[in-house]
Length: 301
Ligand code: PD2
Ligand code: ZN
Image (cartoon, rainbow, N blue to C red):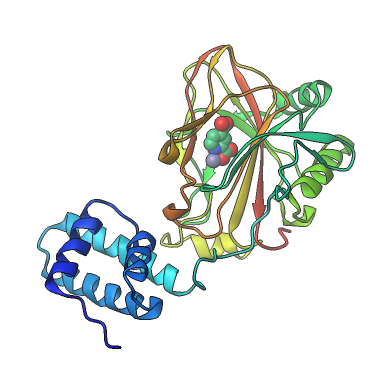
């Protein structure tokens, strides 16, 4: 059967695009309406390209471009499946606890999309204190990877102080890395060195994505070492009296910073459609210490 985009359908699609709906949701609607998926991808692509050509405003061009990119990403994936394989705990039988080797970790909450899991008691109080004590003398104003060049830069959106431990740097780090690998079913050598951040009152980490933006010129250089980031584990090492939660603005979720607990999230492709926009809310009272472990697609040397 030949399927065409009628003027009515075209108008509807344009309205959906302008309202910010994702290519995946538009494709889903077309498939529900009886379209064969591959044809829907092609038709949507052609419609969006034509729409982009005929729209005068820069805003419409930007929206159409974003949807076209999402459509291309969707077209490369099998129906319903994600992109890369990602780390994560096995929650198929809804366990309350997970055996992470040398420690039993609590499962406090989980969200399917975006994939977010909150763990309880991942670290002992002694481990939290030891990480803070080892990190404190090595803190400097946090840098972020500069995707324009592949280097590092001071980032005004990130007003915390930070340092990196090398992977396997000492017995404490080795023990925690082995626990994380077992908990998240991801090899230790696919992880970056653990980063410790310290936020004082007023400090925050504005919402961002942890993956490297493929559109940035420095990204290919960064990806040579281990490929993309596919998961993040933020471990809370202390408890600020007020503020300092980890927020997920797309879904209105805020995870409270509780000592020894952690929030994990994964992203199977470097795209906002993963819903993994997240930030560190400003610390209002007290200070906040976290350790972050980023997980890569491949071995990170
Ligand atoms: O400290 C946090 O809550 C936080 C929030 C967002 C940490 C990170 N991102 C990070 O280390 O990437
Ligand atoms: Zn982050």
